[in-house]
Amino acid sequence: MSRVTTASVRVSGEEVGRLPRPGLLVLLGVARDDGRAEADWVARKLWTLRILDAEQSASDLSAPLLVVSQFTLYGDARKGRRPTWEAAAGGDVAEPLYEAVCAALEALGAHVERGLFGADMQVESVNDGPFTVLLESP
Image 1: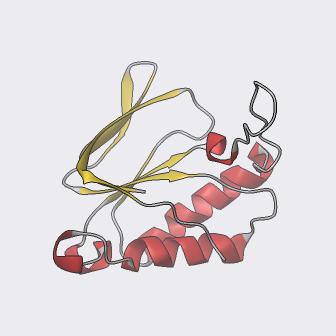
Image 2: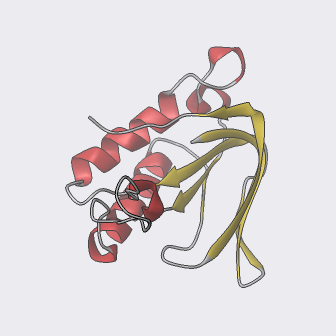
């Protein structure tokens, strides 16, 4: 996740998501063994993590979140010259969990913008800082 001043997502030149004001850009990877408990944990952590101005959270500031699915976060390039994505969940598991994270954030009161799951997206952002955090569920 990155603290950003602006962020947007385009698919085939058409904008599908945009932060209406500064907030968080979340690149969400889902692992093979993730489930609903991990989705709920990630949503709560994203909403309450104190990483914005003056050590405030998105919930403190009502900051929006742009959530973009990104299976390549689980790429492993330690061996050979081609990464493997064996640790990443397949679309049949990842898409419902991606939607569950977004829905859980909305249930907490967040304004959530989304990318388009499985699409070839162009993500544009201007980091604030830059400030980027890797967040993994327990």
